[in-house]
Length: 216
Image (cartoon, rainbow, N blue to C red; front, side, top):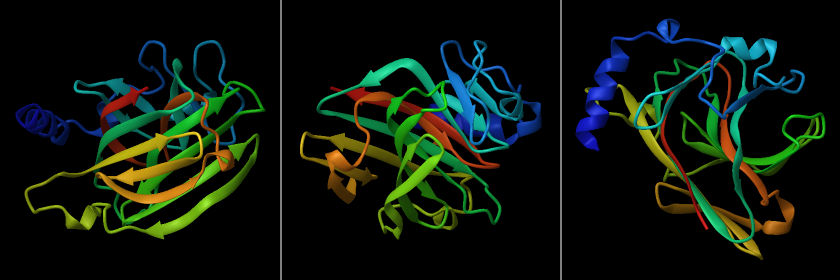
């Protein structure tokens, strides 16, 4: 895995985000941009044409213009389960934009969309937020966590920084972990848990998601 990632990183360093195709997404996946109408049958909205989301084994490479959710409608979980995602953040400049996991997705193609997301940002904080339609509520506001590897912590020879996010859903409480360390635990009734599992990536980010796994 390490050798595979080193080869992939070398390739990405020589391939600019502008050279990756935009507006054409992996089969079965849909992209919805914040503030845009629900996706059409093609899985895109007009603003989604500013997003690159391609299969690049292992996983997918994503570069965003606007903030968006990326999901496969058939990728669902309910009851007790865990979801884990490994991702690599490439140079975000001075921006502190967030990226991570969404769970409990429902009606994602309509104005009644609902989901909960768990995201981190380059400076070492996490956020847990719930969306219902156009309304968002912070379940856990931006909070520093030493478990998060900050972008500035990467070594001189590294081009990206790796973090692993995990959500463990149980009937009473749901735990949120970064790199194997629990950073928050909330009542499961306070968030969306049953539904589509996917990704959330905010504005102007360049990331590689090497895995998104559900364990039931």
